[in-house]
Every structure is written in C-alpha cells, then in structure tokens.
Length: 154
Image (cartoon, rainbow, N blue to C red; front, side, top):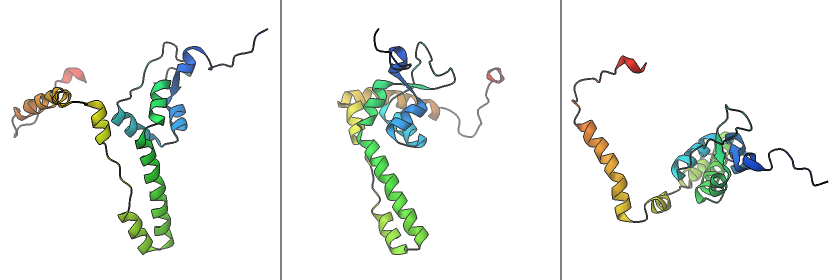
C-alpha cells in the first residue's frame, strides 16, 4: 500500500492559491497585495476545477512565488514597521522622535519595474501609443457639455 496523499497536495489544487492563502503566504495586508499585483502585472486566474469554491479568487502558485522574492515586498514591510514606530512615538508624546521618524520615512522606487516591462525604448513607445490615442480621443470631446450615457447598459 502506497503513501496516503493529502487533499490539496496534488493536481490542480496544488497549482493555485486563493487570495487569502496568497496574502498569508506573502505576509502583507490586502491593500499592499493589491498594489503589488497591479505594479507587477499579476492577475487572478481561473482554474479548471475550483477546489475551494466558486466564490474565491485564485492566483497561480508561480505568480505568488515570483512575488515572494520581489524587492517591493521588503519595502512595504519596512514602511509598515517604520509607521508602527512613528505611531508609537506619537502616542507616547515624543514629538521630536516622531518628527525625525517622519523625515526619515523609507521610500521605494519603481524604476526597475519599468525596466522589466520595457527593456528598450521602442517597447515603451509602442505601449505609449495606446495612451496617446486615448488622450486625443478625450481631447476631441467638447469641454462644456456633459456626456449622455445610453440607457441600454443599465
């Protein structure tokens, strides 16, 4: 008799995490998780068999492991711990420490994400074409009138 395999350890169930499982795995808040997914371009996926229920949001395992090693995650954690120190100083009434903590707040930059997404200048121009088209479309609208939305979509 072979070794018993636990439920969710094999097959399609092992390839996906629910959103709450992903947040627990990454140890971040929901807002930070959403921000991270938007910045890194990670979207939920639909598994063939929804093992936890049809009302859940699923993310691929590889995507979550990709996020685990991102430097933005470390920055989000550093900012969160820094703000805890700031709030503690404010609640104690130590205004000098709070002011210095606020001045030295950690920041993060997104330049490496841009380099990942657009390795060359023509790639960036190709993607900017869509935004410029949208801007020119909005500039062609009259500025003094309101847009009337068709009732057929409601």
